[in-house]
Amino acid sequence: MTRKQILAMVRKLIADEQATGFTDGGNLEQPEGTQELLNYLDRAVDEYSKRQAAAGDVRLMKETNVSNNSSLPDDFLKFCGMIPLKIIGKKVKLYVGSTVSARYLARLPYVTSYSDNDELPYENDQSITVAAMAAIYALNKQDFNVSQHLLLLGYGAGENATS
Amino acid sequence: MIPVIELAKFLRFSLGDMQGINISDEEIIEAINQSARQLYERFSEGYVYAGVKRVPQIYIDPDGETDGQSIPVYELPPDFIRVHQITGEFNGISSVILSPASRSPVIEGEYRIVGMTLYAPKGVYSVEYYYHPARIETLEDDLDVPETMRPYIEKIALAVYKHETEKEEYLIERAVQLYSMREISHIEDIGPVQILGGAV
Image (cartoon, rainbow over all chains, first blue to last red; front, top):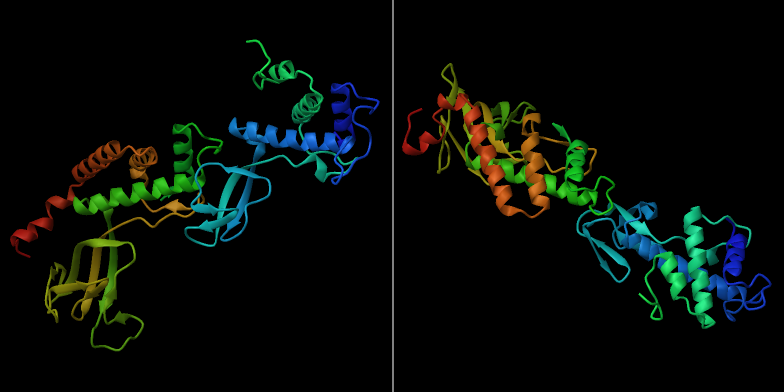
């Protein structure tokens, strides 16, 4: 799925295919319209990754060699098990040696790091969920009640939901 | 020698983490290292032959020139814990057991260890010592213990990982008992009886 396609999917979910609510354009200085939707997609990627990491989704697993005094990878969420090192800020201090091999759970890459026609490196189910979450953020911004959407995603109830 | 990867597989299976998402390789390696270390420490304390390594044919000549074959003193290997026995050849009699001496210089039939250095008079010796298996670093390594130890290393490592100190102690104790019973050779040997003044 390309970035264009996931944006189209979000627009469909929020019934804004005509781009009247979230107009085309926008940029990081003026994050409105499409840029606002992209920001919601990034936020969805972030939240989705954290939830999947907490649930132990092995598809987020990556392997790396961590060297002493290096910085953690940008997409780092948490190590798989204990690794003999200390993290101070974002810097790594090893107990012994200069490198250690480690597995970690990584955040999915942000949607904004791709251009319109780039293929996003997500599985189909990941794209669908990320798009659905981005749509919830967009709808919430417009004061819609999103509790039912959250329930359908299996992400618990909003405060307006009836149990 | 036991391939570490096989021990790791056992531990990961027992801990329910074949995938390696909750437990790192480093944790597994640390548990195996600790279990081997502790088991062999106790073998040395309990005079269990399973924990003995033999270095045959050391040519010591304190006054001689270093000719590539003889050495003035013997530097003990890094895996050394304690001496089991040192034998030498004297007056045509082989395998004479040497006695430890506390003073210097040592005379024929004696040896002395200071730090990690073994002093002995000129002669040919063989050293048997209690060792601790070399630390493993990666899953591709082999653990320097015999295959027969595998069940104990596995279970002790599991107890180490789970911080089950009592279970760990129990397993080590059982291994020490079992392996001391399996050995017949120690009956002939005076071994610790030397402490009471046993004759050589």
